[in-house]
Length: 367
Image (cartoon, rainbow, N blue to C red):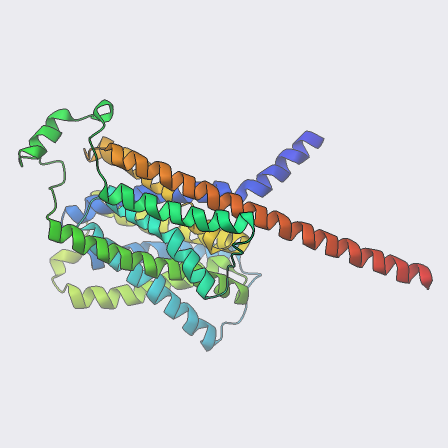
């Protein structure tokens, strides 16, 4: 019985870690399927619109069923905050992301999103949501981890090195790519201008997303129903995305969805990515903070790189492996520092509670 109770307690402690591992697996699928749909000619703003439509339809019934008792009146001020957070963190971030992925590869998109932990940490410090004491070991670990992770993302993105021959599943395709006669099923090489444009656009998307993560910490303090917050943000983003998509694309033919990969991609990104993972991330931000949530981002890169090599015939290089190692090291350092800080906070709170109980017992005994 004791072992079962201990197992349950251990699962409670590790829930945020399991949730974020799941989130990163889902995000790796997002990069792959999004790239495939947009490469087939789907307009990025229309993709975002359909994604948010699927997310809103999927989340609304869940929010109504599971959080009826948590219903709190929504004032105009709070709704305005949610609207602005949705505009910056979801609508702007997603549109920039899909524009960028149209000029780069799925692996590169996953690699550059690993700047998110460092950006999130910086923004969290600016908003005073997070603090770092460089005189303490855990503070130094968090700072060093963010720097190592950021360096790893840059190495992965810009330092290729020789290809990994033992992981070269499609040697004939790679030879064709070198001769500029790539297979029709693989993605065409990108020009330097396209790559630079995509890189800066992706960086802008990451800044917007990091800001969304930090602002969630303030939003969830005001409103306890996390599913409703997620649904509201999806709904506001749907309206914003619809207006932007109409401005960018007015041809009716471009809005049609068939029973193909494009439909599957928008459904996956809407229901699973936007609906489920956004709610999990908001929950993790409330439990562990925005920096903890952001530091799991490197895992999506490793998963995406492997599946890109398998499905889209992208070559893996030794430089990418070196960058991935740095990313994992950075993740470990930050999580270690965060765990040490949380442990110290819990110890201080326990001592404080014990002290209060002792004082109350003394007062009761005296009377």
